[in-house]
Figure 1 (cartoon, helix red, strand yellow):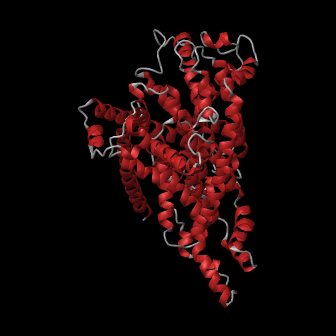
Figure 2 (cartoon, rainbow over the protein chains, first blue to last red; figure 1 turned 180 degrees about the vertical axis):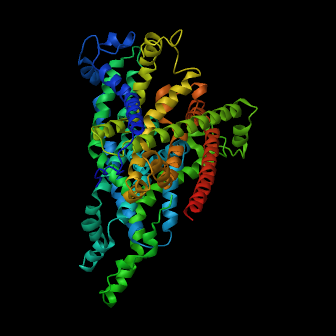
Figure 3 (cartoon, rainbow over the protein chains, first blue to last red; figure 1 turned 45 degrees about the vertical axis):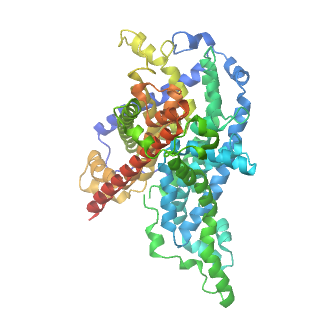
Length: 289
Length: 331
């Protein structure tokens, strides 16, 4: 979908433009790369290198930090927790967003505008406003029904999926609108129900948008700190909170912190970079139109 | 943020009714048609109600209660306190109100600078990378890395870089460039504002880049060709065509950046820990502090409600002003 735009100007770009571009992009690359370099290089340093004065190059390379991170804190458990929470939140969020976006894109009904405006405006709420009420609500629901939401992965999944839902719905509405109506109309004439038309025609045609939304939902859940720090306990703790375990000890194992940061970043960064094409295409068709 | 697309308005969805349907089938079809959209929306509605709207109402109720740690087990029994929590929050002569006002101004300054820089860098990068050149794909992937990194992993790396004794920043500024007499503290004191801004911009500009990049793809090529025929150079094309065409995209982009930055909790929380230095005391962390550290949930809720009202006001004014400008420009 995101075919690289052809060179836009028929005229050759003047030198001033080329030089500004070269200087600007070089500086920006440096700005972006330095922390990435620090993360990667420090994760391969012995402890002495990260406790003394900073050095650009490691005195010796070691993979020790990558072995130690798993025993200093129960990183594997946090990792599994994060995977479960982010994975489940993503799947639920995408499915629910697909239904909602289909309704808004294909039907006229009373309250449509109220719905879209309300859902979008929840993006504006400061998280801090509903942190404590939500905490109380989950505790009360737990007391009343026995469904443990507070401290459980379920509560976190529920919370995170609503974080990504508004933006996902919004983006998918735009994307579904760009799928020609004639296609699902034909499917309806052929005897498909509305859901058949949705899953056989609209969803396959909107795969890039759906992938983009899934990436967004996963990243949102994987990176959230505030609710994770209040709503989890020892067994359900996610990476966002668990990673701080390295820095509250007497010794700060910076090489291990960097190694752990790298390990928890790899899944999302790799996924994001592989799928960024879809994200740009999804944004082009949906949000930005 | 218009959500109904013009297309959907022009052609109300008669398309769902296959004209071939016969009598009884059409009747059940109509019932299903009327109910179906609501059924499809139901899961989203329930969840939004449960996680956003009901808690928001509870939060507003709480802001009128004297909710200290004694009542937290059974918060319904906390005594009503009228507008006391609000009065306390906005009494700028007393310590609580004064600190809140200070935090508010810090947040406003921080947000304006951060949003401005993110937008500027993101737009410039997107425009510079519009033409194809060698290494463009690689560079684009690289530029998205700060956005793709989980917040805590990225910010914790910056915490390491800002360390007084073993950080990269002091090593470069002091040991290598000799710009400072002695190593500076970056995560406490006045410098912390600039540390926070740096991290926020580093983390935030790729989002602007991404959105503007997507927006650029919707500008018709003919516009550029026509301008080139008229003899407009690259810089003029950017000023006359690219930037004006991006207006609708920018309207939403700037608003979203503003709201995210103003409400940002994760960055300062990971950067400074629970107690942010005064110079970088962003409002979200300030309210968190006021609620969870001092166990005064009523006042914390009142502050949150005030924050929400402020954001509503800004968003309303912003949309009114920018939409009017847009309409005038279209005529």
